[in-house]
Length: 410
Ligand SMILES: Cc1cc2nc3c(=O)[nH]c(=O)nc-3n(C[C@H](O)[C@H](O)[C@H](O)COP(=O)(O)OP(=O)(O)OC[C@H]3O[C@@H](n4cnc5c(N)ncnc54)[C@H](O)[C@@H]3O)c2cc1C
Image (cartoon, rainbow, N blue to C red; front, top):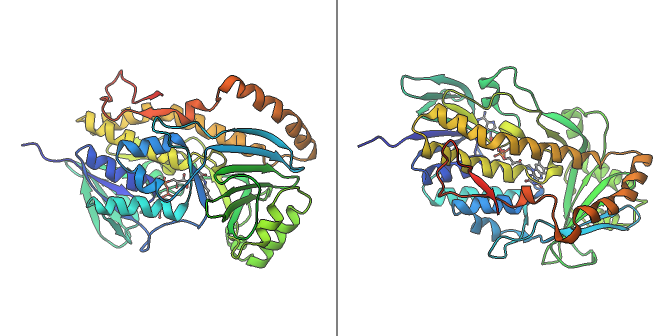
């Protein structure tokens, strides 16, 4: 009888939990090792999960618990600071059963994945910070800060944008790069914003970018991207008191015709701002029996709205490659071959989306004039220029052989 293969998954975030479930489905047993002794649910903000992310979750039966905690988000409206609608477009169509893209609080997404993995007998070992990777006669060994270690056939580095795995695979690997704006947000009650629930409103304000979505219960979820040309010192930023954040936002949005000021005022707790990064192209994704997935390999700017979805797709495709290749290094090479072009393209898209948030007065005037025309042309006759992102379908049952694609456009 052949021995069941094993994996060590580093990081219990989105990529790590989905990887554990997908590897189990591929016949590989794994343990997730998470650095924090509480779960890393991230800041309380929310994120958008495109149809491609939901479709990838569905391949391993993880979509239902996530959808249950989310807001269906079928449309997207772009506005300028004068309240003028620049574009009103579908947010990526639907899956064959009518499912739309969603918006979900980050802690809810993390908890849904973690609970479902736990229910399937895949618990996370917490307080296990990876510090070293070594090779054994037949596999790979992970060393942790608490002095413990673990061995397996393959190590999956799902340890996020500040990945230790990345640094251990290649000490010269790039680090996260600042994208020119901060992020903050909150949840407001008692403000009657116009329009139905589930519409993602994105407003290019005169001085800062503002987004909001109404939940079915009337609560309004919002975020803001104050532009700051030079990367702030994170420790200094952490000392900015909450009332100052509120005051700064009220000032930034005072001249805009949007609900921003009312929403900021009606928010009990405005999130202290955090710095926004993406990751320049990472040359080494795998070495021997260790591999990177999710933000560890290719963090994309939040402006792409695709970081979580890319992490989920990676996890599923990696599991398929390990399922279909007995030789681990060959499986990891195949995984990179199937994923790199797509994530590089999404990363570039995120950079482009983000650039529109930080332009000066002249750039703003040009953008606000050009955008409605460009959007009308791009979405002409029901076309969607981002179909290559949303309609990417991973077919779990198709073997990932050398000449077969892992995914098709639906
Ligand atoms: C404010 C914000 C808004 C965002 N908005 C969107 C959006 O709208 N849409 C979208 O798709 N994406 C969005 N993203 C991006 C998305 O959250 C990430 O792309 C996604 O979380 C990546 O998942 P991951 O599992 O790779 O990394 P993470 O979720 O960061 O998980 C990494 C895990 O590894 C653990 N870890 C780190 N180092 C070690 C170590 N040495 N040993 C063991 N464990 C370790 C960490 O504690 C963490 O639990 C946003 C991100 C932020 C910050």
